[in-house]
Length: 601
Image 1 (cartoon, rainbow, N blue to C red):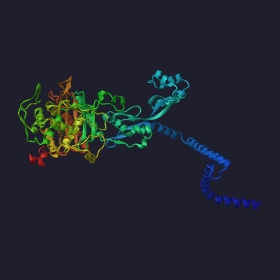
Image 2: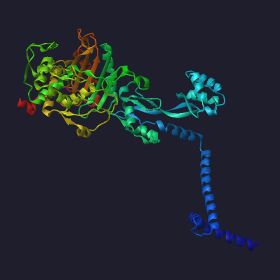
Image 3: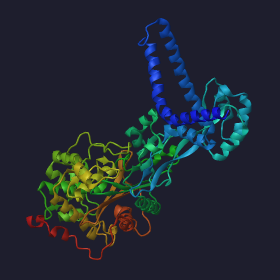
C-alpha cells in the first residue's frame, strides 16, 4: 500500500512540475486546434464530405460558445458592480448628446458651464393606468397641464418627454410614487454664473442645450452640433473656449453705464472696451440686458445688442475718420485753415455749426470746436469718390463679421452725392454698427492698421497677420495729437481721467423720428483712447435719448453725459489693465515733437 501511495505521489509531483509549461503552451495549443477546425471546415485537411460537415458543425459550436461566454461575463460584471457606478454610467450616456465646453474669460474665470439635471419622461406602452399617473404627477408638478400630459401618455409611442429640468426633490417624490413607465434621464443644463454680466456676448442655449445666440451659437457653428449627432461631444473631449473678455472690466463697464442710464434718464446705454493693438474686445455691455440663464429673454427685440446688431448715425465721433482721410491725402496738414464764417447751402438744406465761431479756423480748431462746416469742406475738397473709397477701406460700408452671429448691415445712401459726403463727414446720413466705427478709430491711433475685432483671445502676432494699413503712421500720430488736444482744451475735457493721458471725441446725433431729425431726441457717444502716447485701449460709451440732469446746465449733449461717463470708466479699469496713473503727463504737442512730420509742416 505504501508503495502505491509513493508511486502516486511521485506521479503527482511530476504532473505539477510540468503544469506551468503545459499552461504556457495552452493558448498555442488551442489556437492550433481552432485553426485545424477552420481548415477542416473548408476541406483543407480531409476532403470527405462527412468530415467537412462535422468540422463545420464543431466550428459553429465554438463560435456560439464564445459569444455566450462574452455575454455571461458582461452580465456577471454588471451584477457585481456597485449601484452608484451603474448610475453614473447611465447618466454619462444620457448626457453625451448635449455636453458643451466651458467658456472662460481671459483670466480663466467661468462665464458658462454645464451642470447635470434630471428630466422626466414617460413610456406610454408600459403604463398600466394613465389617469393614475396623470393625477400623481400633477400633484408633484402642479405646473404641468393635466390634459396635455394625459394626451402624451395615451399614445402608442415608446417615449415622450414630460418635463425637462426638474429639481432633485421633485425627482425623489416622483420616484417614490413607483409608477411603471415613468423614468428620469440625466441631461446637461447650461448655467451662467454671471447672470446678466456679459449676457449679450455669451448669448444662450435652448432646452436641448443648443446655442441660439451669441458665442454659444458660434460654438455650435464650429462643429459642436455635428459632434453631438455623432455622439462624440462628451465632457472629456472638449477644450474650454477662452474669450478676450475680462470679467472685472465687464463689471465696471456695466456698473458705470447703468449709473449713467439712470442719472440721465436714457432709454438705453451701451459701451465697449477694445484693445487697439489686437482688436480684442475686453468688455461689451448693452442696456437693457437680460439674464443669460433665461433663454427666452435673449431673443426679445428690446434686449438687442446695440453694438453689433443696431446701426446708428454716430454723430461727431465720425469726424475723426474725415480728419484722418484729409490728413492722409496730403491736401491738408495741422496748419491748414478752413473758412467757417458761413453756413453751407445745398438747395433747401443748410449745414451750420452747433456752437458757431463764425471765423476762419485752423484744422485743430475745427476738431476742438467740432465744426460741421469745416469738416464738410475737408471732405468736399477731396471729392465724393475719394470719400467713399476711404470709408470702404475703413470697413464702414459692409457688414462687420465677428464671432457673434448677430450683426447688421450699415445703411448707406443709394445715391451718394456731394450733400451725402458733406453730412456723412460729420456723422449724419450713414448708419453703422458702433463696433464697426470702433474698428476704424482703432486704426487711427494704433499706427494706421485696420484689425478685425474679435471676442476670442488673440496674440499680437496673430493681429499683425490680419492687419491692413489704411493710413500712414505719421497720420496716426497727428490723430493722436488731435484726440489728446481735445481732452485738454476741447469738448472731451470731462473725459480727461487724471493721470491716464486720455484723448477722445464727442458725438451728438439727432435721431430720425418719422423721417425727420428730432431736436429733442439725441444719441450721444464718446470715443476715448488711453494712454495717447502709447495707445492701448479704446472705450466707447453710447447713451440713447439722455436728458439734462443736475450739473449739466440744461444740456444733454455728449460732453455732459457720455464724456464724463467714459472718464470714470477709464479711471477704474486702467489699473486693472496694468495702466497706472502718472503725475508727469506731457502736453499734447509732445506727441508731434519727436516725429519727422513736425519738421515737414
